[in-house]
Length: 266
Image (cartoon, rainbow, N blue to C red; front, side):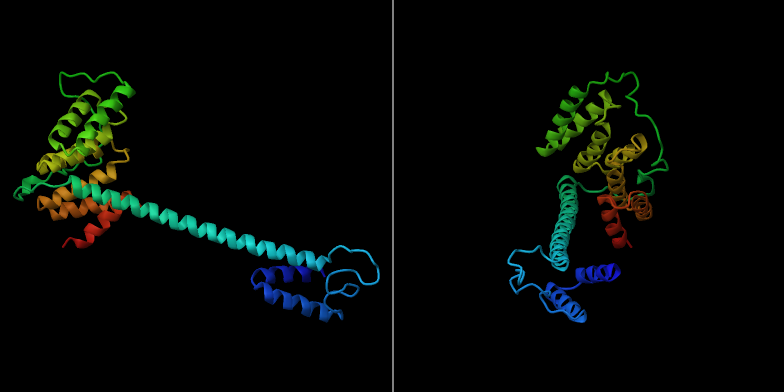
């Protein structure tokens, strides 16, 4: 009997409520009883006893299954909402990246020549950033570093790319080991490209991977480096860098853009 009731419970989770009611009535008939059970009226009151009797075990099971079905439906709705929200956030992140890339990047490429490549062979080199010769790095001061970095970034927002390049260069010279140095090196590449210096931009992007290999900006910097190589006419090198981004940083916005560009290149 217990095994039978378990089977009925499992079946009920996959059936509409009305179908389960019909199944319960058929179950009563199979045991030679009427519905509601013998001894109860249609209202659930006990016939002949004069007092209210507790609900039958079958009725309690029915209520529990009904509640479970409602909870499952609510959970499915919540899961669907969360999946939609995650997809929306991913798309917004990609849109912001593409929009910023369009607004910041600009400038014409120089004539393509074989020696114009800036990628070199040391994209994955792990080197420690050092200030220019004769200049010592300033002691770490997170508050001052953030103020300096934010001031340089504000110049990007104002589209004053020349002064922004100067500010980021100054920041990197003074704080080469700052927690903001990787970001500063990347944005130096962006504003240099915006100023039309494609070669200089490529060198700046390459240094992100060379000097800050574990930084979160590395996939973005490599994608931009591939863009520089395309501008310089070095299609094969651009393809190689794009493949590197896709292989090493799958799921990133840069990898999605790299996949798109790789399909467009001849």
